[in-house]
Image (cartoon, rainbow, N blue to C red; front, side, top):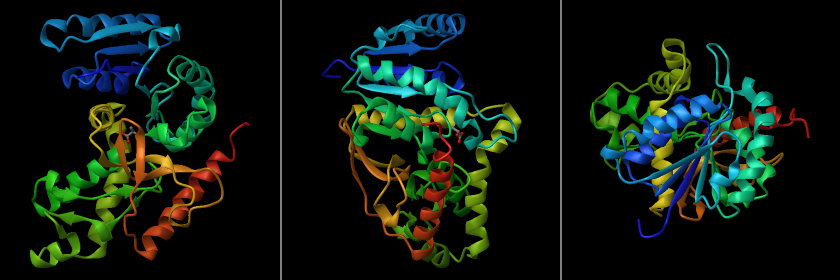
Length: 318
Ligand code: LAC
């Protein structure tokens, strides 16, 4: 890469390390800084990555359990630290534990990298992106959450599987909360440039609303299903976040559904709410939010999702 690129990953659990290793294998950074409050875990993960040096692009790895000066001058700070869902727990249940953690993490990140982009992954990602925005004092275009980028890839996989095409040829967005109140934008799905509802009719694939709703429900249930089976999710979120990091650091100006400050879009009001909308990303963070078409039903569901998030956000201790 022409210029010196540095990424910080806070939290070296399953998600943080899935992200770190995809960043390494995709050669996205010259330096990776790892932060985790557990010194043994942190040193173990750093050594284990360094031992792969002979097989990886030349990337410097630095780490510290509590000295945030190692993160100095980062271009992108990815925060995965925090409690994760236990089986049966919703993402919103994690809020208070993770807010108190963010009060320790976000200010030093902002201090050492005042021009960085913050990428929040910890759950509940939408409210925690709002918290990171407030704690960092950064402009909202430089505070992004991984949001429904992952839900949308799950959606594209399930749709592609159902209609037997390649997921790369399915353009589909899930927006709103990264969670139970997310919204599938059926009306704007296209397969190879063909709107999906016409595609299903053309291909004489039985189309009924229930099938579409079942696919969206399967997306909402995905994380619960994987958590019940293996205890946590890591690979899908790891690749989702490294795809966002690549778009940002290589200034690719691609459009991703990510958590952004959504107040004012689609009639969303009632407070500074962050939720996922299709946004163009580049080196400067959020370059713009697209004006994707929504049916009245879809935008109504989006405003309802915003209210769900604001309801939880209103319980935050000031
Ligand atoms: C998931 C976590 C990242 O959806 O929320 O897998």
